[in-house]
Image (tube, rainbow, N blue to C red):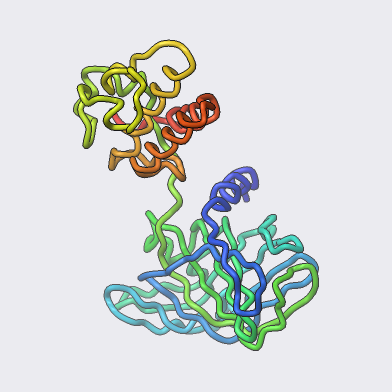
Amino acid sequence: MKRKAKTRNMVATALAFAVVVGAGGALAALIGVLPINPRVVFAGGNTLINAGQLTVNSLPVVLTTNAGVFLVTPVMSLGYEEVVIDIQVDAACSLTGGAAAEDFRIVGEVNIAGDVRSGTLLTGEVTAFGFLDAGGTDLFDFRVTVTGGELADLYTTQDVGILVQAESSSFAGSCGGTSMAEAKGTLGAIDPVLPAQGCTPGYWKQNHHFDSWVGYDPTDSFDTVFGRVTGIGTLEDALKAKGGGINALARHAAAALLNASSGDVNYADGLKTTAQVIAAFQAAFDSGDYETTKNIFEEGNETGCPLN
């Protein structure tokens, strides 16, 4: 298992956690997966937290694809069918690692409209984990990067999301002790977490890249777009502005604006819309602290340009 890659993914996906308060008042962080087809429903078995290890053992029941609903049955030579999740967590229930082999697997057999898949159906590495202490039935969810299995071709461009309903649960919002619950739930396709992207002012200011601009023109007034009086001139002028201070802030703000407006650039979290970029610029301009926001824009603009 590639632990360095897993650590990077854990840090990135942690930024997407949705903080909520459960019915019992316990602070929780569900990552909010919504599995779609192809989906596997599982039931039976248990969810166990003990000494920093969280395991789920359950039984796959049916696979639902766009072609229909198909029964998952045991592989007799293996002696059982199973859904297994095995990860390491700290006392606060933050993901810290995984199993020595794969963190997730499904074993069984399924006949998908005459196409028989048998044995290890799916394996993967858990890259994000969330929980909700909700009383008698708690919730756990997981993001998984698929690594193999007979069904791996169904998820070639997607991750797997798993939502576990832990019934009759003794979990109380902490992973520092021991708790047990029944296990049932759903796993299925979810969109992958894409790496952040951003093109530099140097890219956007070039004449032969003006055809990549979306929603704005090089001759648009910078002050009109950003709602502040700077005397910078046009958006093109801002991109070509030299030096530091307001010039540096405007230069990277203009590039951030164009990154956010492009449907082909996955710009930085918190700056994915032009409204967010404009609001960040205005706050920096009004405060007089240009450098902090300039640095944030600059970092986002230098994460790698996907455009030609």
